[in-house]
Image (cartoon, rainbow, N blue to C red; front, side):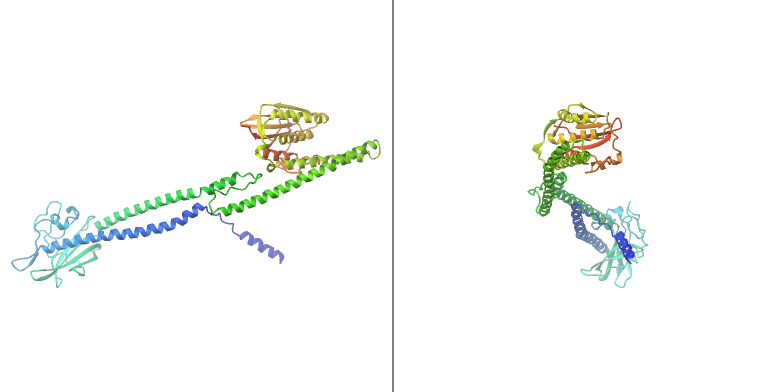
Length: 506
């Protein structure tokens, strides 16, 4: 049962979806603005369409009704009593057709006289042939009696129902083509007649399409302008957040300082206040640990010094005695313990948060190298190691005693790992705008797979327990305090080459 429960728990853990990446504030604001803007544009397009298209349709209908009135005005009674539509000149010259140029209209019906050039003038015979529809506007008409019999025009043209003012409009279908028709009720020679005029929808649809295109382009342009202005406004409004991000990114992990709240918007200020509280808590905790480590190292140094002095007295009193070997071993352990305490103290004092900007002064690296080589020359002679220096002019902004401690640790490690008869060379100079300190030895070197681990505290690369295992940790802390970096490279003779690069002064 426990195994099954563990399997089920593992399956559930595997199926747990990963949290989605949160969208940016700019993206969210644009998203919240885009949908209402699109709805407003759609509503505006619908309103503009109906506001502009309805008058256009009304204008076309009025023109079509004038055409029907024009036809009704030319219905005359012949001497024999028959009614006839008499058209003395082409309709294109009439006032009712001023809206359409004559070439765009096609009239249908047999003609009693040759048509005028470019325009077919009908005589409105009793039976007009079905129209031949062309890409341009086509005009149809019909004059009929109350009983439905056709006097002239297209007999199969359906009349529109009369609504008011003896006029009526309708959309109809004539031989598969949509047309707009108007019917006019009139009286000629005491006889009630119905005049119907119709035209295809090509021209009015074309005008409406143009209007819709203009409206759509105008609304789209307005939408783009609003989005551009909104994007600019959002960018300007988010500048305080960008500056806050830059301040947080430039904040040194070692020097935790509260963020300024003066230029921060009111909506973000609670977040900044909470972040400052967290920064202060972390800084206080780090300082407490540092103070504890410093105090512990100080407290260890005094009794260790006294103990070391007592062991030296005891060794002189028992010189050549049977306890001499044990006393020597005890002295070695006390020396290592004292060295470790000193290294712990140096590590605590090397923390970047323990120093102010005013502590940094211009330092000449050749002078520093000369001082360290002079200090460790006796130790190198005891270890039978040739200690030398190769200095080029270089200057950095730093703390003298910290850089001295850094170089002492590097040279001490190099002497410790160099076999008798070997060489240790200390160099300094400037290359590619960076100042550097470098220590190279003839020892066994450090394999590439261990170069990261030797930076860890209390790690012994040789595995023999010599040293405190804090030397390179101290070097790296001091390098970070001076905005530098520690590089572990191969030496020219197979040993290790420790290089610390700093920003050059000025």
